[in-house]
Image 1 (tube, one colour):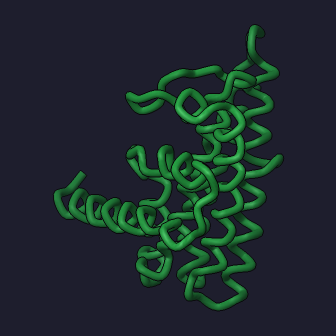
Image 2 (spheres, one colour):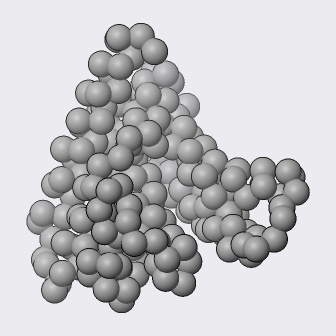
Length: 197
């Protein structure tokens, strides 16, 4: 990885972090819902998906700063999926990124609602982008498909169904292409859509 690319990644990560930190500041607070949302959303991570949105936008000749709401949307979807994945009904994890998981801190009900709120907030972010309406419609179509049953959610179901069973290489490839790959694909596509490509 070149120094220039590392520098660009660091700048993109910082821009996404700054945007995410303000995403819910103007919202009315309901009990500890927004706090729970921010607890997981701002817990760090590599931010590969939002950085990919911005880089693909640049590669297609677009202005990366206009794609930041799309980048934030992908990260919100990713974060909601982690919150739900950690729940007792799924993987029952108690730690994520070196600290207690959302449901351990806020309880299962609030964790579920925080995940739900991040999922819906992602589509609000798409609508906030200062881009032509046609591109926003394309982005909604792309992200809903890649995050839903034909994508990430479908992969999670296959993951749960495969617990305790030996999976074939083909089954494992399908699981990973949906559970992880679909959202990475969405990030790349959203960058291109933001650029108008």
